[in-house]
Image 1: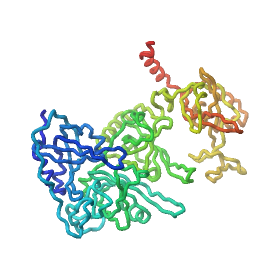
Image 2: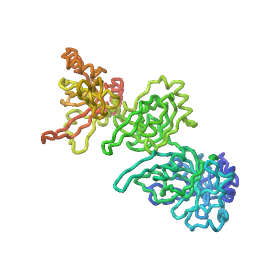
Image 3: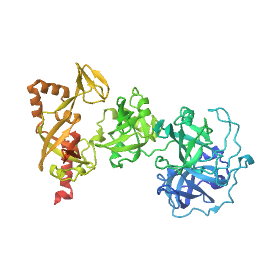
Length: 595
């Protein structure tokens, strides 16, 4: 094996000061000669590892951070040769080495050399008695330099504690961390009073932790702290993490109080950058619904700012939909909420955006949603962003793009059409629909359209869609609490459809009508109906005999003490006969076709 280990590095790792940034910024080539799994209370089965690293002459022990566990499986092999970057701190007066970054190179057949254990641990720096803390505390800090105004850190290195070393038992610590994510201000009101809070995620070389501000602390810190910047933080309260509300990978969380000190650090060279595990848009079909993933893509289109009202809490929330594309030539819809939806710059043309921790949805194909804990970085200076920018500028802008809303596992050419969930009409009628709705895909032909109720008069305000009523000589919308000189119209129709197994009634709304009537405007068709125009009947007859792919929701409904199942159209699309031909060819060439 031609790989040489870094010479005599372990002795330096054992003795160098944690403040020696020139040394700890280096990457070393070492061999893993031992691995030990370290139990973690309350981590829901997550594993953490201590590794023994050798330079062939001596060895040291180091902890793997939780952020590396998923990336470093190959490195957790005995005799693996790795490139490693380490960081050093003192926790409970003991020297602790932490693996900040690691890269697998190869695996040797045996231990290289005869490494020996080094002498006793190098003691922590001395500290004045006034800083004495219990034995279970985090790092024993050296005297901190005199404090300067916010935004102007003291010259020289200051003693800091790793996030990994924080615990509720010590209160004399300072962490240096990057704000990876800052959420919106949330307000609440209940029988005990009113209040507000905001959350943020802090990260250093050793790990991450959630920090929360309440009430007065929100006023003090929300505008001061900026996402992406590095800060010294001290005098915050350390509590056990409430895992019901906190998915950050740490047993503890911080609460900022009135005496908490936060100071911007202008030297962020040793602070961690955000790490991603990107998934191509074409691979989203294989990502579990409701899980979180990282995506980097071009924003092909940004929709207008809208709002949605929660019926449960009677609150409105701003939203905006982005269409993302990447070099897998697929697109997906991502929804921004709240502050991020409002602050999005519509005039920015096709930026590259990296998203971390967005939620995967499955409503008629894959979609993404930006959560309160998600992170968005516009035009990041990383390799993946440069690659996608090059692709988009050269060919992507004019490439043929496949929307994820038109795909599903076992595709059949139709918006959200899923061959694995395909049912004939007879099979669908045999489903036992209970309290929970059921979903299936169907391919059927339109046999009849009820002409009595084809569309309704609707509010002309974009995004409202509610029914309007005559109010004198104007049209009134109860939701918007406004009157209008004119109205709009939206489809609401009932179709009789059939396939080889039987017939059923499907009900659909505006998108269904536009597809069935080839884009015919609902207002025009409704006016033709009301005027007795024969073109209305012609339009309905032209739609008969057409075959579509449907995504259907079967829902139990009760009317006059009679329980029945209603079939609502969630998605509709014309079949993709090229895709259908490919599927038939695959079946013919498969073992199924040989029977």
